[in-house]
Image (cartoon, rainbow, N blue to C red; front, side, top):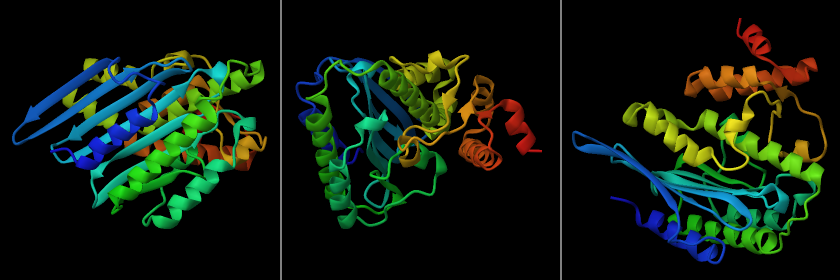
Length: 302
């Protein structure tokens, strides 16, 4: 049975995004695997908006025990709206997976207002923090994160309301298609990077591949990471090794991942991808390497 807090989170999402997306207009992909006394299911709904290329909303159940909601809002680069990411799942409220963040996609987009919202909720919540390198790569210092620990449901819902309404009023409502060409280029690069890191470390994809097979898994991947810019456009590209972090936004240089290095990462087992990425980027920084290639990674693992 789904947790009432998950249903409430959906209500908040559509309430705060009223006028941005239509709750009744979407494309849906779903899959379900019934096994003895348990089932695994995902329902993916894709929404479009005037200033966003895609809003991907997933509701899932794994082995009849863990339930969750995942929301990612990808902006159209010419509007310069930040990414919005939200995940709530696990066994609520005892073992909660919770992530919420507003992620700038170019330097001039940083706003101090979200820091005050972060402080408000971080002070009221316990068990915050992440030991996962890949989560720290895609999230900002204003992210609220909890990994498989107790967390009060009402505090989660309050945070979702505040973060989403801030994103809507501060960014979406005021956005115009006037972003400069350099900032649009940075936006595309950083949206792709977010998708790449998330795709490489999404444990759900491995579960869906096992439960539903390759064909359905590919459909789910497209639903989660499609739209423009799409992960399909990564072929042959060199992209920065982090999306906007504090260091990136201050203008520091980061190494570039070549297409063959990214493919090497995709071919590695899901549970070691974040370690491979973190180690490669650490060594590249220490050695002054500006480009991470497949050979560079393989030499580190010898």
